[in-house]
Length: 246
Ligand code: RP5
Image: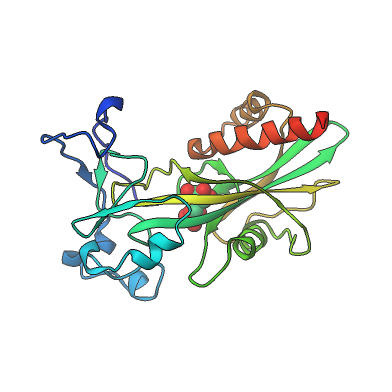
């Protein structure tokens, strides 16, 4: 993940696009490799990102029709459905919504539930072994592909439970490009062997009797939880608690 410039804080009352804010001046987070004046780097031409440097050249109607979260397009520009972020431009593969898939893999051990996380190579933080849904791919297929690519764990025969289709507060989000994810729960009886690979530096099972316990285990070894996944972990833990009492 290329470094993102510090964005000006957006006061809660000015977040909505329906509130006028003439002085709004978001910081442009487009990295050099996605800029027209950077000539579009080789990696872009090879396909990790779409080549358009101007979102107004894109027909968003087909994308809006399949978006996880509805969004508006005004003057040819897609508008982040949660409102102003303080950042403009694009630091993701697509303008508008970038669909991700995040597998929450839980091992039900005698010592309580453990969750499988990977250490991201871009920021070094611990996160779900998720990733972007490829063009033409379904979210269920992306869930098992990303899990297998990043940890070596193959759960292609499992039947996951979808926990959420939700916005992700990814640090690469801007007013015109953002991440939404299909988050699904996989339960396995024992911690399966997991090895960090692809863009994961490491893969590890962490105790998940509570979010505090998980954070404690991560910080005890000098690590950090990927903050954008905290709300997703909360949802997952609520589901585990619900399954226990149901
Ligand atoms: C997060 O980034 C998503 O929740 C998903 O885990 C991940 C997708 O981006 P890459 O890992 O492909 O960079 O926003």
